[in-house]
Length: 251
Image (cartoon, rainbow, N blue to C red; front, side, top):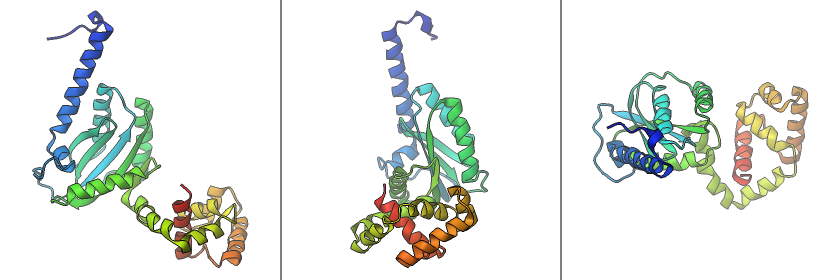
């Protein structure tokens, strides 16, 4: 039976919207993958793939119809799609079987910006690793959620977040790390330098461009920092240590 929305008052429209929302949520909660990953069921979903990855999208989409269209737009980006569902009103989950990749993280970030513009929303993506489809998958998904919760990037992965996520708690407890952080804080300029170098994989020229500095100026700052701390930011071990200290103590 078709209903002419023009004939409905505000209360009736709201009731229909609530019913639509409830049906939408109920449909996702009945998905076997939803039930397994939220540990409401111990039954493994039937799937031919031996390994899958779980891709999480956090979004500000509010309207039920917009959520459906957003889910479809995201699902269309991925080959070897098994299923997709909303974990809650703001988190879309894509379950993808292992296969040839079609999108890099950089490409996905660019496409996500276009989708954000089309739907006038904000969205973040976390690309999970491929894992065996077994009883451990739900616990792994739960941990990947915790890792993603710390992300401030548009698109991230376990590789981009794991070092900071797992090292941070231990560093914060360490008197040694606290003292090193105090030493780092004595140089007001070094934090931006460390972050730029880390993001540039230690490449001085790339880091200098990020910092809008001449390469020689950056070289001078590194030498000055080495003289003061005995930490050589041109060595990857020293650079990673300083990066972890900055991210651990400067949320």
